[in-house]
Length: 133
Image (cartoon, rainbow, N blue to C red; front, side, top):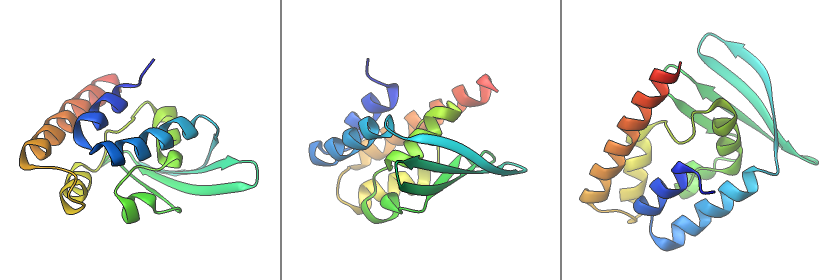
């Protein structure tokens, strides 16, 4: 069964970038996630597979995440580590709309119509997430 985020990203990314995202999503199932610290709305996690280990920080106040691998900052695609934490938190793909949408445009993977679609999808996802809490 496909995850909702997979369908959303299929509509947003070019085919090449979507395949990279899809691989990250599949690989995220091979990792373990351990919460190591929580202070207010900010939680820190170790996401690991065998000897590979990455630090992920999640802020519930603005639904943003960052990872020590910095894949999103370098390639504009969510990494397997953030996807693992997001799935574990049931907050998959609802974060940092402005950064994500601007990355799509910056990398030439989107148009104004797709930017608007991304904005609407993220907005709806944020509303659903807030209602679940």
